[in-house]
Amino acid sequence: MGKRIITFAQAICEGVLEEMLKDETIITYGEDIAKQGGIFGAYKCLLGNVGDRIFDTPISEEVIYGSALGAAMAGMKPVVEFHFADFLFTGITAITNQIMKLRYMTGGQVSLPIVLRGPDGVSKSAAAQHSQSIETIFMHVPGIKVVIPSTPYDAKGLIKASIRDPDPVIFFEHKSLYKIKGPVPEEEYYIPLGKADIKRKGSDVTVITTSRMVHESLKAAEYLKKEGIDVEVVDLRTLVPWDKKTVLESVKKTGRAVIAHETWRRAGWGAEIAATISEELFGQLEAPIRRVGAKNVPHPFSPPLEQFMIPKADDVINAVKSLF
Image 1 (cartoon, helix red, strand yellow):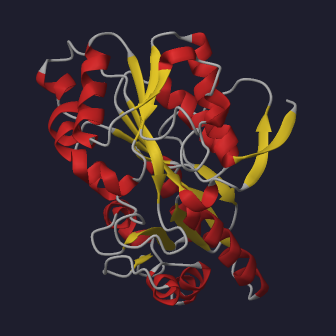
Image 2 (tube, rainbow, N blue to C red):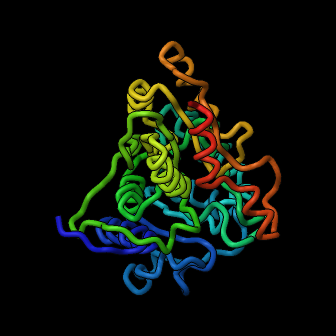
């Protein structure tokens, strides 16, 4: 396969554009995307290439998400940007009480190929209303698939698979990842939802992670290698469904597990993974399962306080060391 080095944002845009050029029922809309390609530039390649199938909306999330439901029921495939993950809260009724339930409530008569996508996570002191990682909430309520890539390669393959999925998908793109670069094939490819990727093989401890924390965990693994600890890094890539088979096989091999995510540690999605590992492999664990997450406070505006609040490579290093 021929590969180019492109950014995470370009990979997202390419994936959406390729699908839109194949299928005229796909539309995409949101706040500030049709003129400037989104506030993080993730839609620039669409401008001028998909006609009026990309358009701006009023600032009304309940209407934006609710209209996606109606469009999908009428035979369209809406790909809707939520601008910031925090703003999912302002339209959450349309998502949790309608989009996530209607296929079930109609006995499968309604198909809802909806993708809600956009930026999440910390980004240079954006403060409490523009910095949250809230993927756990959508993992908890049944009825939607949750995707959270960490690399340009994964971002493109997963957004294409998400658009082709017959069920609703929520697609989180960490703000700090939009500018990172990586190899992406020129040929078409898809990454199936629910399949984890082992980003680094190791034998002593498994770190299970997603998104920005994949990169922090890889930094931690390189540091720990110098101290004689061989870390395996498992990138879940999707939280619903999550790849239990790959996780359990890795932990069986290493006997130790650390779960690292940027969302708050208290009741974060890591607790679900930890509980499953404990239920399935309790007798094979060499040490307690450790969780790494943000401190249980709103995101501060102050740069030093923000750095203190969010998890980083050092937190993964400390968690791993505590297992030996």
